[in-house]
Image 1 (cartoon, rainbow, N blue to C red):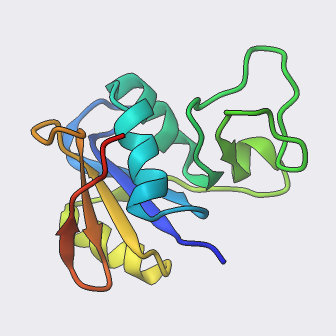
Image 2 (tube, rainbow, N blue to C red; image 1 turned 180 degrees about the vertical axis):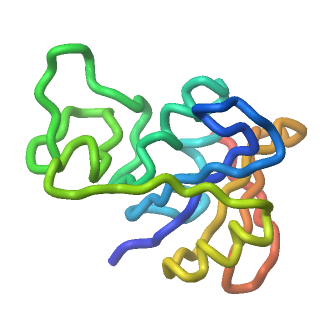
Length: 145
C-alpha cells in the first residue's frame, strides 16, 4: 500500500517569487522515515528542491532528481537512486503544476489527494523541513539519520 505525501516550497520554481507555494505529490513511502528522511538527507539545496517540485507528480522519491544526461530512465525500468516521476518518466501521463496560495491551501489540497503527510520547506528547522501529519493535524519530528 502507498503512503501518499505532498511537498511544498515557498519559492516558485519558475518565477522564483516567494509567498506562493509550489508543490509535488509523492505516491510511495510518504511517512517520515521514508520521504521525510530523503528530504532531510538529500534535498537541502533550494535548486534541487525546485527541480523536484517541477516534476509535479512523483511515484518514488530517490536521492537524485534526474537521470544522467542520455541515460534511459522510465517508470518500467528506473535507474537506481533516481526519482521516478509520472510525467517525465511515463509520457502517457500529463501533469499540471500545483500552485497554492498558502499553507492552509496546501493542507486542504494534500488532503483532497488522500495524502497522509505534508512536508513544508522550513530552513529554520534542523532537517530543513516541517512534517505535518494530516490525520492528526500535528507536526512530526523528522528522524535524522
